[in-house]
Amino acid sequence: MKSIPFEALKRKNVKIILMKKTALIGGKIYTGNEIIEKKALLLDGGVIVGTVDDKDIPVGYQSLDVKGANICAGLVDLQLYGDGSDLYSAELSLASLERISNGLIDKGTTSYMMTLATNTIPVFKEAIRVAEDYHHDAFLGLHLEGPFLNAKKRGAHPEELIITPTKERIEDLLEGSQVVKMMTIAPECISDEVLRYLQTYQLLLSAGHSNATFAEGTHGYDAGIPTSTHLFNAMSPLHHREVGLVGAVFNHHRACSSIIVDGHHVSFEAVKIAKKQMGDRLFMITDAVAACNKGIYQHVLNDGYYALPDGTISGAAISLFEGIRNCVQQVGIPLDEAIRMSTTYPANLLGRSDIGNLNTGSMANVIVFTDDFKLEHVIFKGELRY
Image 1 (tube, helix red, strand yellow):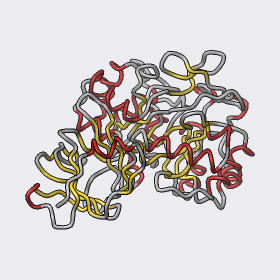
Image 2: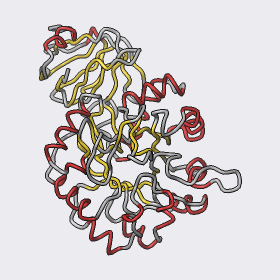
Image 3: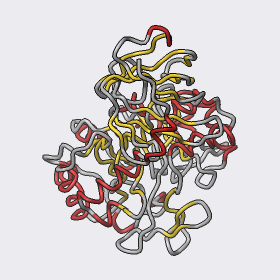
Image 4: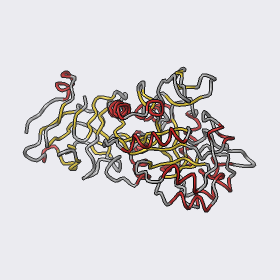
């Protein structure tokens, strides 16, 4: 068995295709279900083979020593708008999607949902048209955050572009599309009949930018809306007389929600409260944007977050990996649970068993990081990125 230390690979500073059969050794393995030590994680042809004792590594595998680091699945982000200097809604090109994909993978996010905030219908349609022709194993599809929201909770979304959902408008926007996989809607702004029609498109629906009462929010979850968009942000708050959508999320036995753990969109104490209330129903997103000075969303970087020129908070400036660090260091969530919040839970919402975990047969998307949260290595489909 040939052994190649990771440090030797890092110094080359190039993309390296792993040998067909590879064993990651010397680390703590977070599979998504359990924590495994003193075992090897086997990769073969871009797929997870399983874990074995170091002494039982099969013949023909090359061994890569991670020197005590943590090993977990690549991260899954269901809501982001761009990366680096690319805001997809402002670029609308295959080249920008490719740059975003590569930039995210190098930050440890190996699966992502490209999101578009409320925009004109022509921009939505062009974004869909371009994305239909983009094929990448990190790209999960498009998440349309709008236009069927509640203007009273619009946040950074232009009020004049928010519209009431009808069958005709849904058909005009979505008919023939295979790439739209997720949509944020305000449950109080859609009738039961129109909601049932929207559900025929087999999208992951999320309640957000909503001023729903507790009853309206609960009705939406009971009607089959499985999750919610950035808990606390742009939704009716928890009040002791009317607990709003936050209360509906907390009290519903099935409803999930994403949350932004950057310390700006939501305080760390609020994250702690939400985690105690929701347990495994709470997962992380970044809501990350990119600096942009054109189009509807002109994002300006402030101290740790992005805002519109008028000061309205408009997006995050963290990676999902940094969110894991914040969960552990600032909120007190155990590392294995923080990992699940950014891998297993969002993957489960999508019905994807091949990402977000290190189970046998899953895609060989793996990140390696130290106890002080230095991202050492990213493996994407069996390819060592660095």
